[in-house]
Length: 69
Image 1: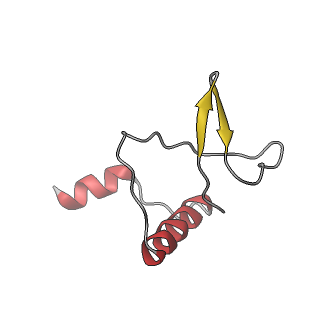
Image 2: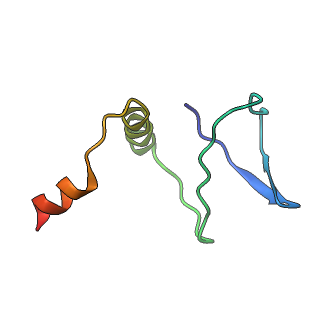
């Protein structure tokens, strides 16, 4: 897992830095015009959460709602 950024040009996302492998599955987050920077600890936590989701280690949304209701 790695984090990169790019820009939409002509309706396509142009990735900065090293090109992605053909057929790569990507997730695109759209900026709301505010930029942010993650510290090392926050980036590590984000990557850990993404890895958990990739493994299917998820909590059902209905279960969460029941617990907080």
